[in-house]
Image 1 (cartoon, rainbow, N blue to C red):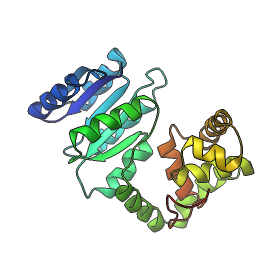
Image 2 (cartoon, rainbow, N blue to C red):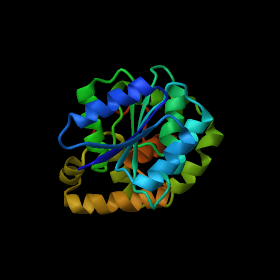
Image 3 (cartoon, rainbow, N blue to C red):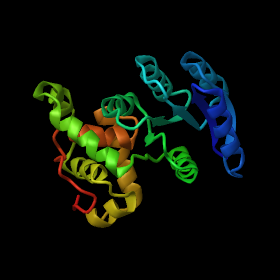
Length: 226
């Protein structure tokens, strides 16, 4: 049963999230806090499967909290962030910090609990409309900002590039396996190697890398062939 740590600025909303999670037979809230530093301490103490962060007033502290939890290899906790609509640059920073999922704060209860399950299982969740805006942010980045990603891209084999491109296009493991005529387990092995080589923690970060490095064109859509 996935366990969830709730991080939210408002006591009433923290209670609302706890009640929502308590109503789901397969989800278990294990703690709640309003403080970023306390969130890190509680994550270390409770080792939740998912840290649900609702960022009402985004700050550099909240981004640092995501980074500290996401990159602590002892925790194996996944971070799902709910953020106000319209903060695209902040959303990009959160994903680069290591968040596994990013949803608008007006997400429905059903969508939220479904996303928690996906993230707990090691998946990633970003709404299509937000993905489009994040791609636009990448397009506005200066050439100098893509130098390091381009260097890391050069370490990938041709097959690893194909897998990364497919991931960036939104293809599932099964779809990639069918297209490349390889086993799903082989796709997972390639994905792990790609993440290690490019320094990414999750598929979400791998997708961001694909756009930053220029491997995937900004106009790429879900229906494209990998």
